[in-house]
Amino acid sequence: MKKCLTLHGIINLIFMYMRALTERIFDVITFITVFVAFSASAQKTVSLNGKYSYVLGDNDNVTIREAKIKCVELAKAEALKTALGTIVSSDFINSDRVVNDEFSSYCQSEALSSVKGEWLGDERDP
Image 1 (cartoon, rainbow, N blue to C red):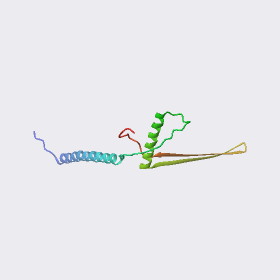
Image 2: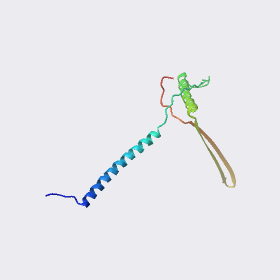
Image 3: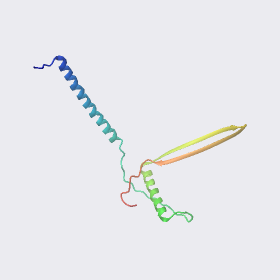
Image 4: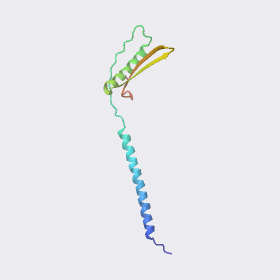
């Protein structure tokens, strides 16, 4: 028994082929979009040098080793700040209260500063 394709069968085959092709194209476009998005959001890596002087006072309760570690950390922060800049934010809170006909006022101000980068590691010992 011989089977022949009708026009309806041929049209169904064409639609199935087009649907499969469309799904593959969609997958490829999705992959490329995700790849480009991750590539574009990658941070640049920069080699930095920094210097910092930490003076250990007579009344400081730290060892020489702790002072050296603190000096290295401050040198890293200074190098990041010099190369990439800082982020400064501030908050101001003002509160007025009246209790039993007595007025009181409270003010608080807070400023924070942080560097715009992250120290990834040392190429050699500091």
